[in-house]
Length: 150
Image (cartoon, rainbow, N blue to C red; front, side, top):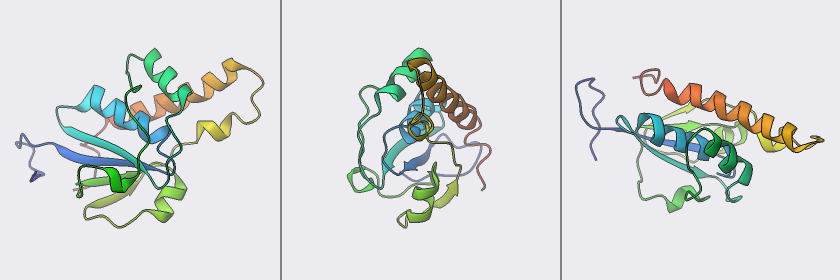
């Protein structure tokens, strides 16, 4: 698909949300983009590695009315699209090791809720960490594509 950056264009921006394991943050971003911005964004997510879909990510997204349960953890090589208008890395490791893609690569890091909860003492603490990151990602995705550099 040919993408125009013209505001009048009906074409969508193809955006890849990239994280290390494609288990949580990139999955949430893809889900939010489909839910909130499908009229202007064709979202994809992938990882440098496959870690499987995080069940807490699925759970907190469902709480917010977004079903990502059918999404799956995948590698960049498995995507049906080879070029993207924007590649947005959501974690430092993915940003540092991002494979080259034609398109603009932007880094917008978010904390890793799976790391945040390693010392959690309750289910509620775990859910709080995942909800916090979910809401941060939603706020970011709501600003797209207008806040992306042209």
